[in-house]
Image (cartoon, rainbow over all chains, first blue to last red; front, side, top):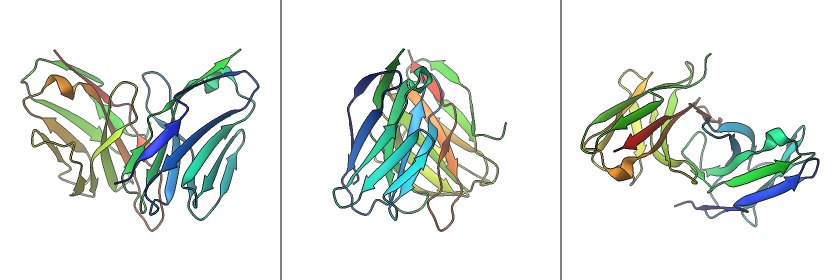
Length: 112
Length: 115
């Protein structure tokens, strides 16, 4: 079955700097890759997603890149702010709306 | 609020007791998912429904676990004879199934603690 690995497990950046989180997946049939942000005690919230027919997607300070050949995808957050501090999860899915396989998460700390 | 809602938010019970959780999905969503999340880990898939049909169950879902979605709207997840290892956050998510990938939206979860 699908396996998703996520790195790093923790990431500390200074406010205003960029943060990059990387994920690799094992099943070449995966074609949908969402990213979720989870604050302590709260629900995972979808922040951006990408489908296999595109290589990059941006939404304001957040961008995701996908390399299907290498089977990895990355989350980029620019101009980080203290409110970006949270746990970020990547996930992969086969087919439309099917089960998600999540990475183990990255704790992002933005220091002001 | 038209998001995914789960009830209860917290459940504390003694080992060996049965517990039942409820999930109400976003009203126009025909797919409903259950995941389990333990501390420091990502959510792990348990099972999902399309309308009232349960289409897939994870190996994580032992025979003590049962899920239903009788009318294709809300769903219940029951755990019988609870064990210490069942302590976790149980998350529900819903999405709309069509020909393309549609995002899954999560509820706040039910945190289960087994004494």
